Each structure stands twice: as structure tokens, then as C-alpha cells.
Length: 173
Length: 106
Ligand SMILES: [Cu+2]
Image (cartoon, rainbow over all chains, first blue to last red; front, side, top):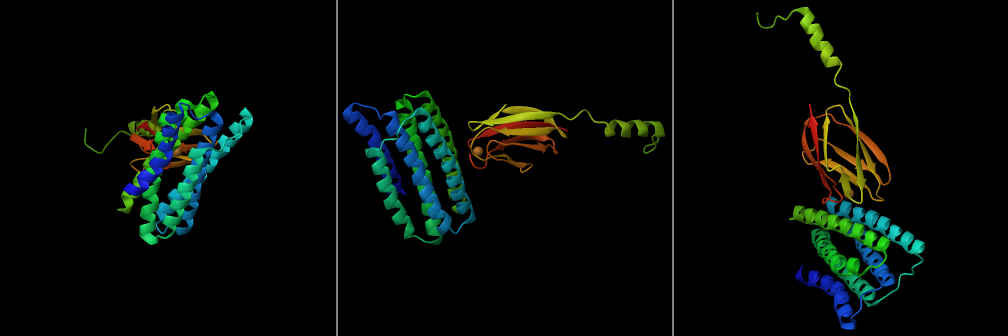
């Protein structure tokens, strides 16, 4: 749990340390890319859970994650198209994706209740980390008002998912 | 007067009063950006709630005491009729940070 949490937090806090080092904020195209990537990561984790989870609440939670994050990412794509912004890959997105791939491989080795617990615990930690990044870095750095507002909605959704994941985790104990 | 013996006229009037309740209302509750609005609504049994979901997400309006569980698909309006009185806290099962209160008079 501790290792999982710190891995997710480390990836997202890279954003703040990189920004501090360069004395710059992420740009809107970079923010859009990071937010979209964060959604894709959760969708991939959920798809793995839909095929691997044995507990029905865990499976239902994973289905909720796919549905919500796909809806939000579609909105994000519509917005960047409307704003004529091309999402720009960046170190934070790359680090997030790499760590997510490692996490998927790690979870893939687990089975049954062990897998269910590990997936849900990671969902709690991951949503917490994303919420922290949204609140302290991505939302304050966004300059376009519509992008900022979409990120604020995203934060509310992610906070809801975190609470939902915490409830599912509590029931697994 | 002896208990259990009401004049027929009184009975007729009582039944008549029950058969014509105060007019049932339709009340709108909007879900926009993961917020139920208004957050507190007063209604009565028999009223219809129109749940207007403006989000691209599925939400639910789920009573904590189990009295109702309404699923509101994205960009859709669904209606439900209130059948039980009470001060009901409800929330969204998918986003438990969404909370509101419905006070239903008998
Ligand atoms: Cu919801």
C-alpha cells in the first residue's frame, strides 16, 4: 500500500518539482495531455479489473470507472478540438504512463481476493494523487477558462470516485 | 357518543376529503456539474420529482434509508413519484460526494 501510494504520488509530484525547477507552469496543451492520460490510465486499469476481479462490487466499480472516464475524456477531446489546441506530450504524461504500465504488470500477477484488494487500494491512492495534482498544479496553471472549468468538474468526479473506491475497499475487509 | 359509531354523513365527508388530496405537484431537481439543485427540497407524498441530469455522466439519486433509488442517465430527465414521508438524505452511488435532502410531508 505504501509503495503503491508513493509511486503514484511521485509521478504526479514530478509535475510540481519540474515546474519549480524550470520556474514555469505546464501549458494548456500539456495540461490537456496530462488530464487525458490520467483518464486513459484509469480506464486501462478498470478494463483489467473487469476481466480479473472476482468480487461483484469491484467489478461494478471498474465498469463505473470505464464509463465515467470515457465520458470525461470525450468531453476533453471535444474541448481541445473546439479550442484548436493540440495536446502536447510531456515528461509528466510519460512518467505517468510508464508507472501505470508497471502497475498493470504487477497487478496482473495477483489473483482472486488479493487482486481485488490491490486494485481497489490502488484506485484510492491513484485518485488521491490525481486530485492533489489537479488542485495544486493543473487547475491553477490552466489559463483557458473552459479548460479550467472542465478540470474543476474532473476534480469533483475524481473526488467522487475516490470516496466510492474507499467504500468498496472498506467492504472488502 | 359511543366509540365506533360515527354518523354516516361524517364518514362520507371524511372519505371524500381523503379521496381528494391536496393537488400533487411536480418538482424539478437539476443535476449539473455533480450538484443536486436545489440541495434541499420540501415535497409531499404523491408529488412527482423530475430529475433533470445535465451532465454527460450517469448519476443516481439514492435514499440513504433505501426508500428510493433513481438512476438518471446522461442528458436525460426521469421522473419518480414520492410514496413515503420522511426527511430523506440522498446521494449518488457513483459519486458519493453528491448529497442532498428531500423532506417529504405525509
Ligand atoms: Cu453521480
